[in-house]
Length: 483
Image (cartoon, rainbow, N blue to C red; front, side, top):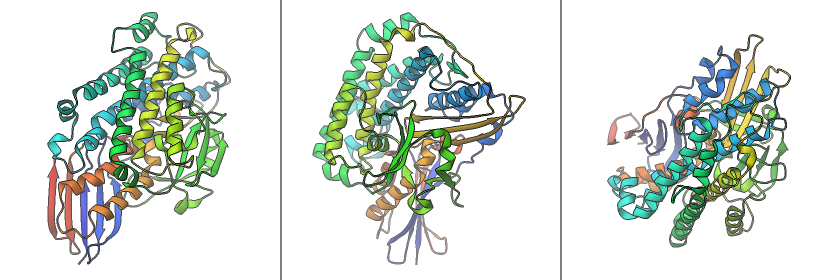
């Protein structure tokens, strides 16, 4: 008698998905799938809208990472008005970068402190009531307070650059609509502790050290949980540096060999395809030169630190060197090291915020430029969760006629399925009853990727969890419900 375990939906992620695990008559896991069950429709209903509305419209995909969509769409619309990353004004680029690093900083802080750290601090098998930021605050008040204030600082940087903390309007086709207010610059650089850039750099390093200490004490779990070989993809600066705002596309295989050689991202369709499967609304991207079976890849903090040659900020670079030394310079394929990489990027974002705030061009200069009108625009950047693709075509009436979005979580679709299968085999194989710890183990593997399922499917989502165990005749054997 075969069985099927269903986890629906997955919790402590943004959006709505479910997991099914199929067991054979001996209780062995034969198949595991992460199903994205929300409808994908945003690419269709944006068609027919004036192109200049895109940077504001598309960020409604999500309230967690709207800045990423806002800026990716703005970069695409720059091309429509004839402005390139090389011809945009320095003030506009630096303001956008400041906005972007504010987003990276606050999103990484949100994920680590609110979503991931309860599992680390209390354990996978801890009581569900303890696995939240409130319990974290009761256990480690200083750590929780730092996490909350770090997110607040990042959101205030976004507000100062985008106009609002959520769904701002700062970036427009060809540039930005305002420079930074000198009072905001002074507040962020010289404000009273703790809400200033220097303190954020220190706290980001503290969070990194917290993880490193945890890793030292829990090395077997962190190194082996859901670890598997994969390809990795991201944008990098032309000199190979980590660059979260602009660059060329690079991919490496599990051994570190380049399999995508620093290409112009405007040619991405020549190199990346998307497979559709009947059991999920989310597509499965792959590198065409490797094929559907072998060409899937990871994106996000782990991938970025595997593709980049160095980090252009001193304290993050030092942390990066230690990170690379751990795997002797080879790509890191340990899924839980995503948290390590994410915290190195948090430190880098804090350093970049401080550097950009000290640049006089961020206060004054040309805000917007125009060039020769184009009918097609592509914008890429590294969102907190990974590489984000925005591609638009515009007709002669200035209306969007085509939109294609490959969001970070979509790029990570197959890797998340791989992680679910590995954890299911370890925790669910041979089991006759579902326990809370088993369910959370599967979710921990998914949460490492910090997925945004609403972004990936372009729909609203909810976050309860239901797990159902069925036999071969679909008779219910066991069911658990959370939230």
